[in-house]
Each structure stands twice: as C-alpha cells, then as structure tokens.
Image 1 (cartoon, rainbow, N blue to C red):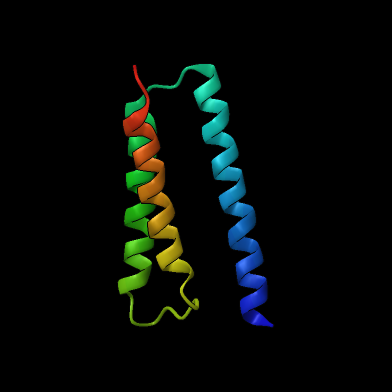
Image 2: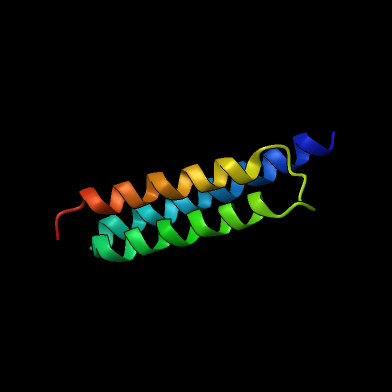
Length: 79
C-alpha cells in the first residue's frame, strides 16, 4: 500500500515537471535552463539513492533517470 501511494505521488510530480518543461519550451526557455533543471533533478535523485536510510522502492532511481532525460531534452533544443 505504501509503495502504491509513493508511486502515485511520484507520477503526479513527474507529470507536473514534464508539463512545466513543455510550457517552457513553448514560451521559449533556453535549452541551458532546461539542462540545468535536469541536472538538479538528477543530483536530487542520486543523493536520495545514496542515502542508506531511504527506502522508497526504486523511485529515487526513476527520479535520477527522469532528470537525465530532461537534460537530454534541453541538450537537443536549439537556441
């Protein structure tokens, strides 16, 4: 039950982040800013993954992976 709740919360937060990125791409945010957002998310997920007291059932690895994907989106954007 606990993992279902955490997964749901993670998917909602990930959806909000993706929505903000799509909105930023439409408004003309630079690829550099999107890359920095992705790197911050990757670092946050990595810090949670390394922490021995965290037991989130793999969500921290998904968070780090999503940060890398966001960074790739920012890298592909032509400024």
